[in-house]
Length: 387
View (cartoon, rainbow, N blue to C red):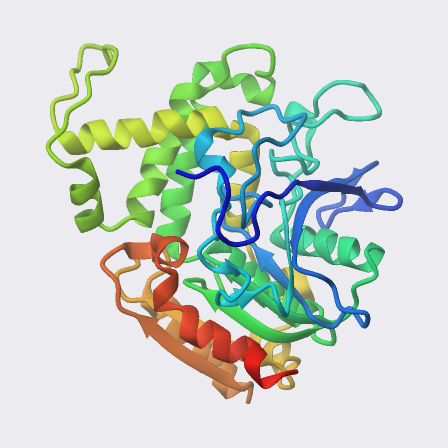
């Protein structure tokens, strides 16, 4: 792999500390919030060409280009972090064209890639927040990002785009800040947390909190809940990648691992899943995983934004929506986008709905830009046709 992207090239993470304390929906207050973000392209003089990309569950602010390292993290910035997770989508001449648009991606509040989260230092104690980091909501995350845009002098947003949980954040941004958002592009997302997601999410959270090394979240300075976090990742991973893709990736190779309580890995898929869990532990923080998982688990659009869904969506009638479904998705099933589209149509919101045919499952939106490019480009506007 080249150490430079053919798109936006080498980039660096920027950091911004919000003005004043940050009040949370559940009543907590963070005395200081710093958000890590990256910006690709130039903001126009009127700041009217900005696209906000919301990353998915375990993503980061590093969406495009090559970022060698991010300073001050409590986790490892591994090789797989260095190339932007949406590098195939963002850059000069790409679907999200940085010759025309300024694209900003921000690490979530509660994150572990430079934004204030459980592994950050609490300025009131000088120690890591750990178990004392408060519960947050998905709307808190969106609110913090909108406050960052305010302080960067960005009012109107040309578009919000996100996949998976990032797609749910698009819905929050569109309904909570309807006057600031023009175009809304949720990919493989939904209006609510489904029953199956609740079960999968709970399994993952339970895997972490039941690890003896979790210590109630106060594990910094020790080994940490590595087995629990790896187990959680394996539970989640099987909903992100299709079985066919897993079989291809696993091939016929079995990598020998340390003894697993007397059980020896003997199948390529076992070896593949264990590898996915073990490499994830190096680059992610268990407390952040729990906080962001809780954000998804407890998501309630009506309670967080305020109002019934039909009323909230009715605020969006001046916006243009493009909803993507992935036909092989078993994380956010196609029925969830159908429900979203029907609700938008009932509210008289202009919406287009497109189904991507892929055998890659939920992860298609990360790895198959050619399936999305034409529609993204058309929705955002063709640079060749001018503004």
